[in-house]
Image 1 (cartoon, helix red, strand yellow):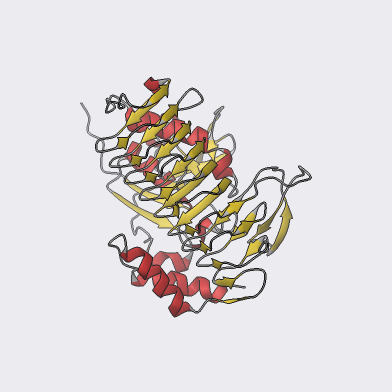
Image 2: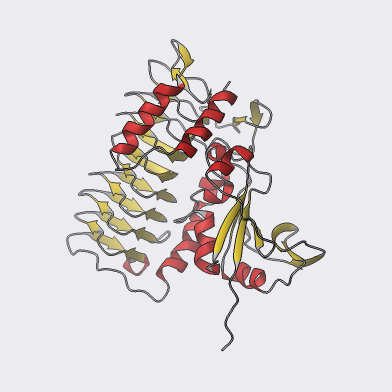
Length: 385
């Protein structure tokens, strides 16, 4: 049997940094959680490279390092691969690039020749709302990878389930006195995660490792709750990246939430206008609201942002990094990074205070705000408007 030589992998943002902001203000495109894993984690799980690196914004390179090598495969960080994509990428020869349905997917070395393929279900994101709109497909891809040739831990007899063959529970996870319905898509409960009593979950759904669904939560798929997140209340078709909390009652739908975010008790987001019309959403490319083809969208929130109790959020609200939203009434549909306040008054959050809040929250999880993180946040602070 031939042994595959070591492979190096480079994730390319594919010129989508602004289109996928505010989620990408603090990370490369491939680091976005989409499905159960991040896009990069899915590539790594299938290709098993020796080393990885990033082609991303210069200010992000302090944390997400480039890979200095002439021998690597560069892949589009916005494309979620499946086994068919991996097969095509693995057979690329030096100097070839792969295009699928006319989209660039990967290159090996300096590309001089194009390999063209057609695929019925190429899974990719180009706008922030694509993450929740296509999350069900992404959960299916990752579920197949993570559960292949493995046996689930048993679901306790005190639970009720439908299509239990599509429910996978990792070691150390706890699910008690809950209802799990996998008829519309798989349900994945990660390592050491917990689903508390009285919860109702409809798949596709993923609760990643050490995540918590609090008592009597109602969750509609496709939804992903990232590692170490805590959620409660009513949630529909939303993605939490990691380490974020929505621990209380209140509705969140058709949303993508970054890391280290927190929703105060009874925070509610609208995800549909009273007119049932197509939405205008803030664009980081043009710095203004732009017409979109979508009808449903709740909140697109960057890392380290927070809401106070009883906060009301407009349909299609975009919140930058490290914003602190509080006060009566609806805040604007675009809340810039480092905003402090709400509708009554709003000023810029002081950078040292923002660091202090981030450090306090991260300390609760025995983690520290790194110097690289501070440099990235400082850069975003300088850009904030």
